[in-house]
Length: 161
Image (cartoon, rainbow, N blue to C red; front, side, top):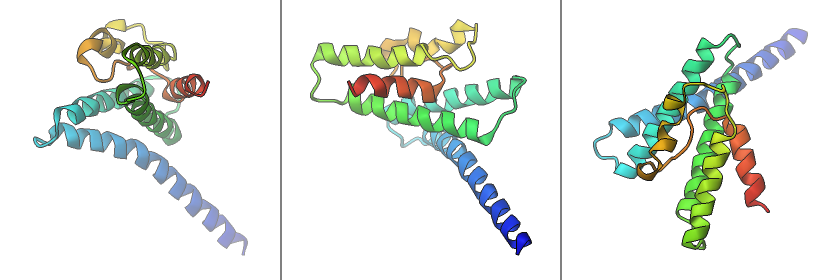
């Protein structure tokens, strides 16, 4: 009986880790698919490029760091990045209830949350601020070096006020 319980616990742990890694890989893979699909519209391609570049940056920086890279870490970053972008599109870009001034303030709120919550505190500002510097031409004017769970929480706390 004890062996059966241990096997069940091991199977459950394996499934949870597979699920966690599945989220990162799913978002990363979907971004890559959209980028390479000649039938994708420009807006989706722009979003996909940001997601792909951000996840690649997070993954590469994590691998280069001394810290152990867990699937939960990658999963959380990917999940909250996706939630952050979805909220940005819904609550700022496409929100018909906002005036032009309110929309501008809402976009700044998201940009500030991204830039004020660094994940690695990367000194290469040229790289990490590439989407921010070109914000007029970017649908996603966010910093690559963002701790997405913290940035998402920051935005949600201000939107609920």
